[in-house]
Length: 102
Image (cartoon, rainbow, N blue to C red; front, side, top):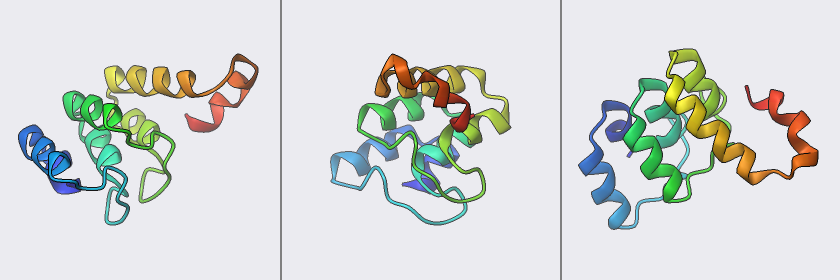
């Protein structure tokens, strides 16, 4: 699924998820499918993976996490989407830790 996510093959990603692929599988150059899609700027795949429960904070591979991958690639809309997801996961009192993810 990481390869399909990195290459922007949304229908293949959907098919794999529908057939039970692990949305959070780790390994390889990008770490996981969410990092791959984030790094390559595939916003619709990022939305799909997040909706299916991909770990936004999952660490691994070259970029660290999906937010760092999107930031490195200059993919502003993906950065906004991921920041919104991170903010939704934390209470207002924990917002000071957001800088850790950027």
